[in-house]
Image (cartoon, rainbow, N blue to C red; front, side, top):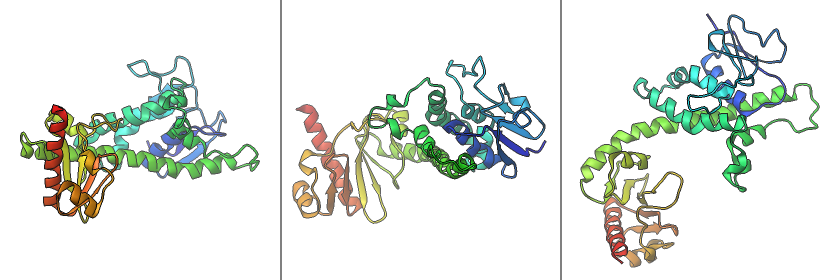
Length: 311
């Protein structure tokens, strides 16, 4: 049956129904989006998908609410918000609509659920507080940022909430689709990185044909011998370290301390490599003018890391 109406509650909005609307409006672009608490709209009916309101979770009837008791929960016991419920039922169709290859859909679906949907679910249900991100970042979490798009308290216009919701929707969509694009790209990169790891053999330097996500593929391959990555950019070459985990700046090995913060002639003098252009003070990135210069700098960085380890 054709979906003719997408129904969520009126008034102030939260991240979960806003993000649910991103999914549903992509899949059902001709459906009318209704924001209402009128019983005639929030009651199950043919052609209608109701979410974050309605008092029940019944996918067969097209109702995806989580405010009732017991709260719908994942097998882990973690509570769903309406976003998690909608993602569970419609996420794979959404990924297909975005052009994610069929063979990658399950992996992207699971990855996005774990890294993006679950945090929204937990924060919406009060299971995680924004302050857990730390005092500097509490106001920078995605749910808080999206809710900051709500009207200010003294905006008395009758359509203020609906207007703000409509303006927030494309912003929310940009976050969702960018995150999914990166997840899908990581899967595409994995095969390229695996081939490069095989080509590197026992070497400590991984050469890639372009910049791409590489850390997770290196971990998956168990390539513990790798310390640095080299790849071309538009007009030059990059030499980077390999972070130990996704959420830290600590690396398997740093670039030589003598290079830190230097550029051009000063860096060439410090490392003895013509074409050395720049080394970040954090010692996680260096730039060279050519492949040969980048590989020579990488070899020197490996030697320095070995010397530091022995010391």
